[in-house]
Length: 265
Image (tube, rainbow, N blue to C red; front, side, top):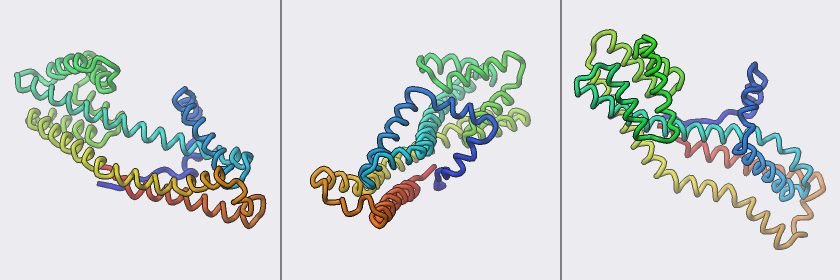
């Protein structure tokens, strides 16, 4: 297991200045990302009003939503990768059954792809990738090479390891059924361990979010209950420094708290 970490804002800004960054920007132009951006802008305005009694300062904080979008995209990709890994496990189970029935690897994969797409009638990433491999096999590309190219394209550690082992076994004449069964078992155990870890950390994650949100809720309560109570901290240098320190502390506590409870299997 390894502790995951988020990209720093400076690295994000630098990556957007690289060639092809326009495609990254276009990726975020859509209803889903615009909704996240709107929520982020609203959050900045609320923070500006709570900590500085100024919507203008809140507008100045809106560029931070670039970071919010990247974090959201990373969370979304991680969810998609978990779904893909689970579907890959199902495909390997069907493939193993076909190999035990006496099919060759190519025929077993083609049959497994058809059976898998029948089970997953909707938009399935694994179904589309399996179909691409079938199309490559039809073009006389060796199946081990097609699977390896799929593993490189996805970049998932378990899928790439399986592709490398399959390529080696296919060329050296290894026991394919044994290899695929072992890979399926390892992936299934990894998925189960990941689910157990997420269940165990769900309570801690909720506590962390509540604790990080408490200062904001307290400020909101004071502003709504007694609007003039915090006037001494607004519109002066000393108060601005104190409120800036409080907001920075809240952001850093949220950042480090999320890193502590973030575990990748």
